[in-house]
Length: 456
Image 1 (cartoon, helix red, strand yellow):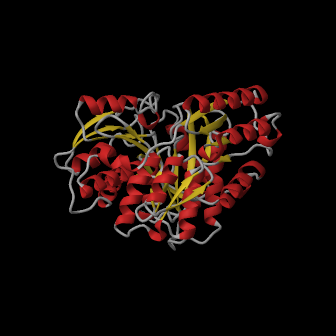
Image 2: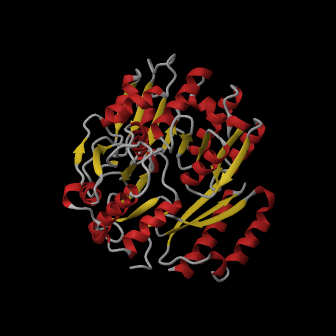
Image 3: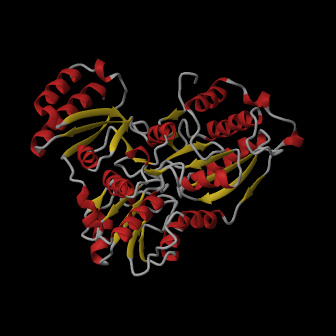
């Protein structure tokens, strides 16, 4: 067991009832967290340690929630259960409720069979890699039963009934007070996920006429051909209802993909371009810099350069984007997948805040979304997600480096190849970018075939 790892690039994630998402491991994660909290100073200077826990709508969320709460309680930590709430809502309420930590039970965009655990510190930011490694060490190498307190120090758990209302008020507060959504028609796809209640309420309370889809979770339909990973149904609904904008969220609502009034998908790269250029225009973009990842479309580089904006790229993963932003004082960053971070408003990606930010630009510029979207033109990309049974250093995969070098030589300065393993799924992602779709499709297929053959 000591050879196994719990944490990936975005917390702990796996199939429910299989390692690491088994009840015994999850309970130990709660105990390990509790032990660490009790042995470090509390920033809130309270007598007892407190952790808030929220979740999405997965069936397995119930058992994971109880296991985490039991582990924390057994170590002498009090728990407040927030119920279904977007990931950024947990980050916000961790700070707002002066908790020592916050936990999100979610596997984000993954199917319902998976679940996961993300942990926020008291500042609302995800905990550091060092803290994750210490939790992992305690779980896998220590006998936590020997560290339990006496019976009189056991913690309590209680449910917080108004958590959703607090988050709704907070998200609305990020939208300019001199603007409303009166007269605007919005289609909202909640992906049968954690925003199924708060999402519609936010847009309706701001005055929009809202058509909601994907808001009937049953425990097994989260992300099922709906939400941010499947925007086609949203595009059709926008056209059918003649909406001004469509907003599609993933299971834990920390990302969004939007659709313009013509039914065209507007991904995270375009959202960054629209918002970044607007902020630059009003001198609200510190150091004239936007942060993104290596997966960003080259068209974003072009759009930013034309507007005098510097584009900083990090490794793939919103936590790396946030780290870069915090380190250098940037306020806007994100990923093409729809994680958009406004660091002056929130501590992590927030799909609802991102969507409202785009609508605010539409209002201020008095332009349709399709007009705003013209600020960026995509360079053709082909992305392949290849299932693999093992991971290896790509440089050690027979023939891989030679193949990539040859393709990049052919693409020259007009394209690129980017290959990486997924941090949350048994996949290797192959991205090829260039001006000729037929050519880059062939290149992507060649690389994919090689990796599938060598790593299966």
